[in-house]
Image 1: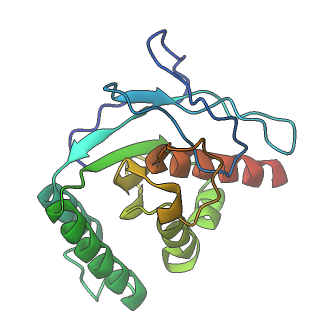
Image 2 (image 1 turned 90 degrees about the vertical axis):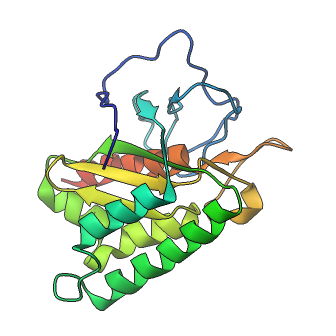
Length: 201
């Protein structure tokens, strides 16, 4: 992926970073005010176990459709059927088509990332067979793609930064008139699942 500014998951929240106004419980999608800031933090959410997700910075990096298409070609060896399952090839053909249609209508693309687990077994469970769990999370949050970069051991999410609550399938708890930050919501959901899987080990 190009032009990603790295920040560790242990970075403390800065004084000029605003948290979401909504009180939400993972895996409910996140809501926040639209601001000019590129950085935001996950809420310090209470989960059913009584534990909380750590506050982290996510860097939202603008991308063009052409950059996203180049990323997909790099991830999939130009959508090669020799190195990808039929489901994966069809999935990315469909998501590229959707991204093209929406960017042509004026929707902007952003990418963000979070670290994957150090335990490869947990990572495999997060991904699922042929990426089925990542594909489902992608669909639920109205994204274009979620991809595990094995070299960097990071999960990248790509899509619009915001969607209206009625445009996504992920459960939401939003004040009237607020849009959902789907990139932030999907990353928080992935981190929540990582935490729950680690607890089972």
